[in-house]
Length: 514
Ligand code: SAH
Image 1 (cartoon, rainbow, N blue to C red):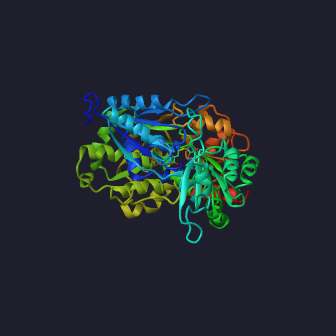
Image 2 (tube, helix red, strand yellow):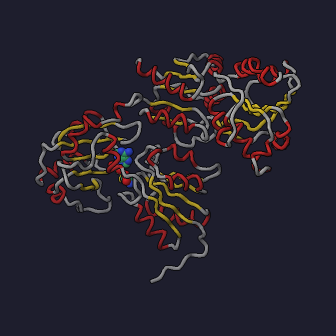
Image 3 (cartoon, rainbow, N blue to C red):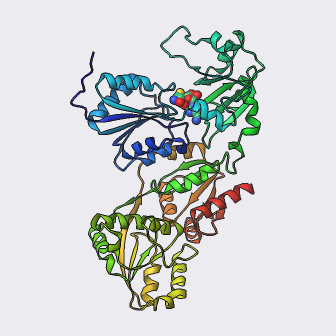
């Protein structure tokens, strides 16, 4: 029988594998689709940070188990996906690992096909392989095994008799990987041994594999259930049986990372958290992104647009932040097609990130202080003023946010420059708990909380969440530290060079010192 396309449904549903939990293990295609999605359907296993990639206004629907609520039954998810396709051009159904490895992705694809909905599948990195690798266990190894078996330990609740081929699995050669096996671990291992599986073969369980929360236990088939219980490991975890487990002590690179096992809170905006989070995660941290603010249009969009159009007439353009550069050039290229329309203005910037954004549009900075603070920019201007024939009567356009200090304006005016303002954006409180981090921070606590600007401090305080007990504070620089002091808080560590890499270094040093 031929399926006819339902004419009412114009949208496409993408079944996207999210990988085991590290956002870095998502495919490029997957990320691109999340960024494009009008609607995102996800459950608890996906990496929460990925939700932050969605564009503003994207509808996010959680169909997983969360805070005591039950997961939506599969039939309802199937129906929901069909409904979304009727409403949105691009729906992304985000699934942990690979969508077709015990993820019921096949059922969703069939439901979409039956309803005549266009769909595509984007494979993901499965925890069955990546979860082991992250704990130092290669799924195959020459000389140790020539095959691997992946099976599910969790039976379909509606089936009464076991459909697991226990005897077959027990007799199989090579590496055996069990997903969804933690709740019945003891029974399943006992059944395997009763069916002939040797109890002395090495075995391991890896919880939250390939994420900052990873914990693993190494044992044997006979000893694993007790070891897991003792260590308090739970779901989600992969269980692996086989000689390859012996390699773990030598190949377990993840637990040797400097920030392994540390939970670190990032309080930047959704748009900006990426770089800091990625650097911390690379060092092994369990990063919790707690977006407290969001970058919005300036209150006076007309003034902003006019300032951008006038920009080519200035001697100097001064950028205070990466956001300012991004917003400025988004508006600039909406009006002008060619960067040469900007004219020959000299450029000043605060911060390496700001300079990097300028470089991205092909512009080099003429004046940038070593330390990313306004006073240092003024000092740098003073040092170099002669090179530029002095500052007096120079026309300057200062691109900045609605909030923040006015040092640059005041000091340059004192030097008789003619300074106009281009207010490019506004930072507003993030009202949604977009990724469930607020709830997690309150229930699980954290080791370190990072502040990357005064506004992140103000906005974090505005959330009214108490700092978890024992949580240390890291500040990006003296201005941010001074704002912390306004709230009676003292940072445990302050970055020396007021940059994201500097902050990451400071946190690492603090953690290393214990
Ligand atoms: N489609 C997924 C598997 C879904 S079934 C995949 O390809 O990975 C859910 C099971 O996957 C969990 O019970 C657990 O066994 C495993 N799992 C998923 N993410 C994991 C992770 N980060 N670490 C360990 N196990 C994980």
